[in-house]
Image (cartoon, rainbow, N blue to C red; front, side, top):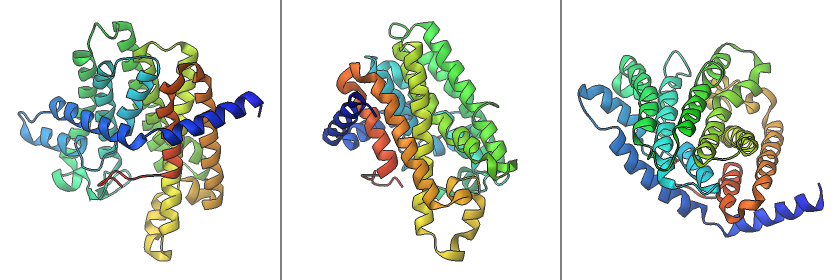
Length: 314
């Protein structure tokens, strides 16, 4: 590592230590929750909207995709108001993917964030429809709610294309398929597609909204993907350390495409450290933006260390 890289690393550590990420994050959660409440009102047919709202407005949601989007937008001097519609759309898409992931034919998870999964409350048929409805609602919300005086149309088109790519057959859908059908050697691909895509897409969309250059977008892409995978790897490590022999054997079997399940906890810890370093290395390229990059550095440390909790959040 060069002296310049070392100084950047030390500088970022001192800044993140002073930055109050919890206040920044929880403030944004409150603002985003208000926007989401307005974006998904109950209307006819009531039941499908109730199912949509159940997952989109779920208690305990950290709103990581929208918060990362806003932070990336603000990095380049973008207006927070310009980012909110896309931030909400990302949460809608994220919620839809979780609804479908939890279905019996997919990951078969009966609960999410300590609450019954959508299909356990509304039934499999309604859960599928709720997820199906949230995807296009997200795109519609971006187009109808983004202030045209803040974001040019061409940028919006790139944002929509980015989200479509992330959730489609080359993105999260591909990851889910290989999680179901692939062998153990597919673990890296599964982790990047199932978990890295959402982080990548969120960071990139924020940059696109603010007019970041192509080189900056590529840095955000690599950063977001690393953070997304890092968060899940650390989740799996923490879960493995609390497992009690046979009690969680079924959970371990279901998570066979995780680094922990395939390679063990020690290897997963090595992977997590590599991902943390990779994410921060990408951010070092944004030194010229000064303090504006600090929230993105802080997200990396939170993903790795979980230095605080969000009350009801897990």
